[in-house]
Amino acid sequence: MRVEDVVTVIGIGAGGWPDLSGTARSALTGAEVLFGGPRQLDLVPQQVSARRVAWPSPLVPALPGLLEAERGQRICVLASGDPMFHGIGATLSRLIGPDRLRVLPHPSSVSLAAARLGWDLATADVVSLVTAPVAALGRVLSPGRRILVLSAGAHTPEAVAGLLADRGFGSSAMTVLEQLGGPAERVVTGTAGTWVLPPGDPLNVIAVECGDGPPASWVAGLPDDAYAGDGQLTKREVRAVTLAALTPSPGALLWDVGAGSGSIGIEWMRAHPSCRAVAVESSADRAATITANAAALGVPGLRVVHGRAPDALDGLPTPDTIFIGGGLTRDGVLDSCLAALRPGGRLVVNAVTVESEAAVAAGYARLGGELTRLTVQRGSPVGGFTGWRSFMPVTIWSVVPR
Image 1 (cartoon, rainbow, N blue to C red):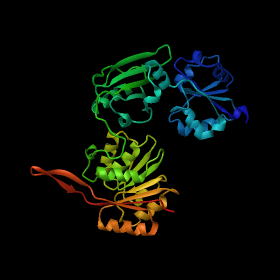
Image 2: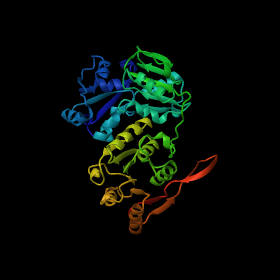
Image 3: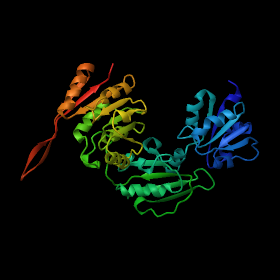
Image 4: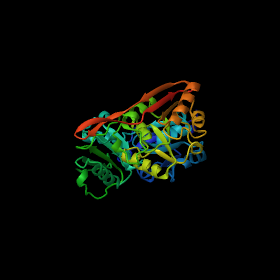
């Protein structure tokens, strides 16, 4: 491959040119075109003669055209820290392929933060709020946990402090590390519940040491009262068994059809940060509730589609797994879901009515799979005593169509 066909991506920290390796400096000196954000471009001295091109906004849609326009030139791309850690390097690898990419990384901001704090990076959670809303932090909150937050700007520390206080973690210690590795490096500390510091430098990382607060399990079966709604909710015990049948795996996409309060899709996404879900719900009020529940439980990336299956399923990305919690008896719902599944994908259906059980029985006779019937009883007061109150039995059908 010709040198001109390779895009060199160079990580650069707040320390700028003096902190770059000889290899990185040599690549920049030999470049003909230099892409980067204004802040990164300003860190490169004028002795580097490459023509400088600042990234447009939005960046990703413009990338193919920008690179194609400079094809045949020696191209360097500047990135903050490690380009393969929430950076432009990973985007370019997907776009042009790793064979055309040469990456010269710098320590990432979280590596620098861990070094300053003396933290074991392997035991800390890392959450990026560069493109995600602050509600995404809620998924990892737990007493005693250490979290490193990639900030979206100067106002992110204030937003993080507000979320921590709202979620019962106001006693958490916060450290904001600005311009790490540069001459303007600054470290400020405080407590989430009393955070009053004004916005500082937009280039910052936030370290959180969670204080006392309500623990939230990542295991399926959150308490029913964790969800707002009108009662259209898969109960905790049934939810745990249903999620076990769904078998969440990293990166997998779930369709939650007839989502109700959104509990199945939400707990699917809580199983792993890369799990994705689309909740399809015909009620506008319930769709709004799903969005609120997802944000409250730390998975604001849950996509909510307001519409009625099967029509609302058209155009959705191909699912790895589908859960039907409502609408099974509607014409076309089951067949549309089966047709949409990727090869080897799994379908799980919960049925509580005679009519939906009949549809499950017919599907099972045609496709096989596994059937499970659950009856849940909970203890509750009966006068001065305790008795058992039963919920409606639920039939769970799980199948991998052949």
